[in-house]
Length: 279
Image (tube, rainbow, N blue to C red):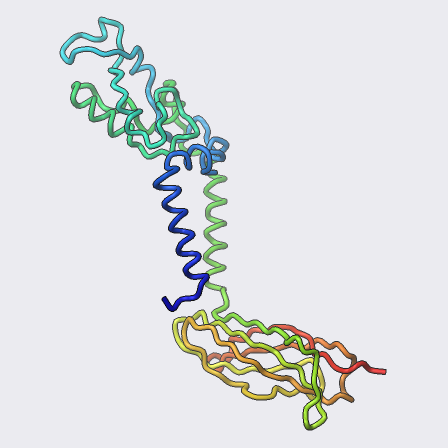
């Protein structure tokens, strides 16, 4: 009971969403909500490996006894048991051809093969195959579309790997206080800021804060601090400058956070330094 309110909100939200999608809506998610079903048909061609029913072998459907010559009766291998429909999680009949509701789970293949075994018929009435193969043509395994998909996939994997290995292990943010400025006992102009540092590494780090952009700019208070692994460190701090050296009433300053344990790691953040109106 000690977590923040947002933690409980998101746990509750995803709990309800999971129950609603998997327990209540169920196949309606695949039929009406899933985007995969919409774009998969654009990516398919006649050489794509899909779950398919072989109508040349299966038709004409009909019930029969196990030991009769069903071919003499003009029947195909499909005994019209509807097991493929009963096991389908989205409730489609794969014998009607490929439909966008099909999620490729292959439950109909397993069910049909079981029936074929019981009838002593060869398996594969429903199988992973291609439209070209079903029509008696040769399936082209290497084709421009497939090569294009492979190239795009490799590029995406490369970009993801680059983003992972080149990501910064420290998050740095500086926000200015709502008070514009104040004058301290030394007659210097002070601005107050809030510092937020996120250590994304698996080990603790010591950081050093510095600021630049104005002459005679000084960081008041702590400049060095330690942030534990995976923690977010926040603290207020002040910058001060001599009023006569300020070029304008609004000035840009750059904050630099350096890793004391690794001299090559540093991040920067920009903000404003507000001073009195210069006449």
